[in-house]
Image 1: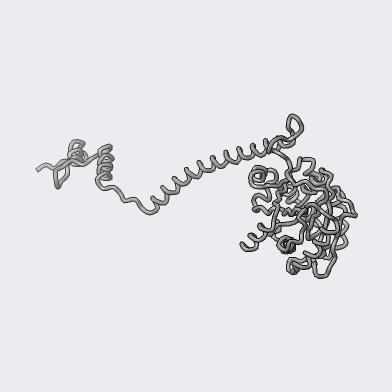
Image 2: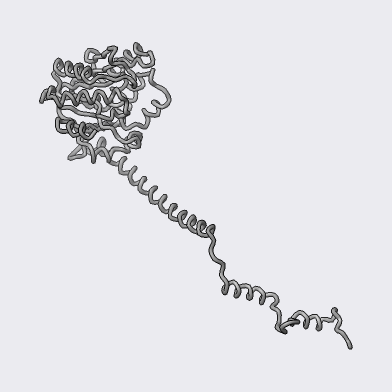
Length: 332
């Protein structure tokens, strides 16, 4: 019996093309790939947890990119709106603001009293209000309840207060600085309401002021000495000791994000506030220069504050009455 040689090409073809057990042909080349696809279709793999996570990540990434695009367009539109509003305030065709678009909205007054806690408060927070009152030929009096001796720089800060106020148009004789042991510059010190109220009432009566300006209950920066002034003023309102001819304005505390966006807080201020002051670029530089006269306080973060803070260019104030004070105290 002759056995086929393994080297015979015809016999090799027969061995490759036929199954010795079933007699069916094996798949070769492209046929093998097609068979693999058919098996995969009949027995699909179940998706794993990692596959779900990957799909979710890819979907979220697409939506996140779209959201970022939308946010970028919204911020761009808002920035353009702020710049246009700011230019309309100061660069109108007639040189005057018309209608509701006014650069300031404060009650008329001849004599105003500003009550602060420390030297530099008058510029750091109330600079725009002082400049606007002086522009209206209103005489501004400043009552500072401490000499700012927390870091043993009281004498230096006293002179800085006089220099800064003078640069804003406040006369030296119109500045009162209280140096009392029970009103020290210290966030841990408790300033008694009755002590502050006595000082404030004495100034109101002796100076015959039309407007009293001070902090609101949050004190702009949350400093306890700032807040104490508000509660003393509120106690005077509740007791009816402030003359009816004297309006009380408190500087509004805004969210930390609004606090550091400069003129880009303009639309929000115009929409939400009843009394406001907005400075042009020249006035903003005047307030910044006055703040720099407090050289003992010019640490790095105050340098940033001068550049970015809205309080260097925008002040929004709220007039408080007895009913407002009652509501706020009950809410507190």
